[in-house]
Image 1 (cartoon, rainbow, N blue to C red):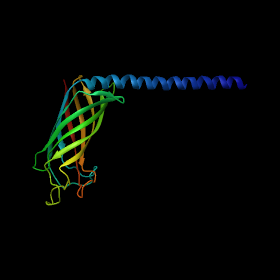
Image 2 (image 1 turned 135 degrees about the vertical axis):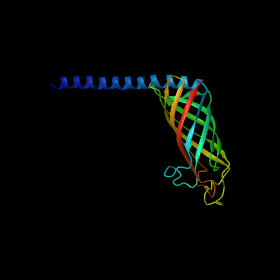
Image 3 (image 1 turned 90 degrees about the vertical axis):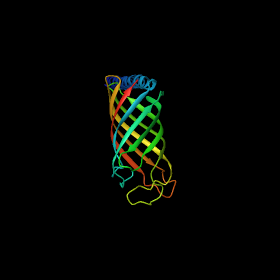
Image 4 (image 1 turned 45 degrees about the vertical axis):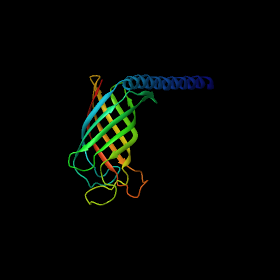
Length: 192
């Protein structure tokens, strides 16, 4: 009576391992191919972002307006089920508040269905205030700040994409003033 239980248990373990291997192979098979394709081409993205949005990473807002954002993503390399590529961009505030230019290292994963997720780390240079000399503007503490983007979107018709883009900019408490800025909005992208 013990023998049939061992055989059944062995069959279940074998099936479980086979299923785990199949899932991993499917995940690995869809990710790198899509990421490698993405990493090979140059892409432009642009959109409209709400400026200094409260309740996100920075916690509060002082500045207003809409940012016009534009970015070029360069050729990259496959890395950890995705692609690692450079991103050069900027956001211009339409109300005269803080504008910026940035350079990031961006990691992106694209699924077989075209959904993609990206995040990165870089540096931004801005034209905002360094100290709290105006009650309607953020005190950013340093001219060069950390830039952290997060993006979720969908690629369609192979070359086009729509996404939700979030960016945070601050000095990570390396200076006395670090009020930080958070922007969020929508972007359209085109791959060459």
